[in-house]
Image 1: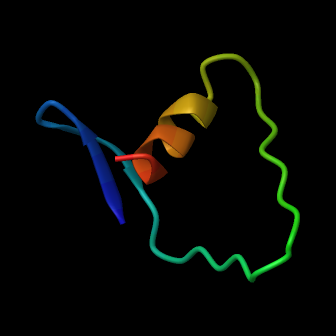
Image 2: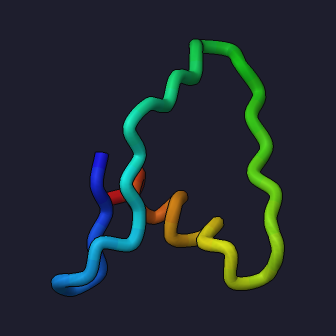
Length: 43
């Protein structure tokens, strides 16, 4: 999955596997791209 903002590629995820019922946390410093990562799934 590739996520772009305008013409700029901001995330390139080659493999992500989350199974049903699995609990996942997303941790990182300010400006690390957490919100961008989540917004790629809400499009």
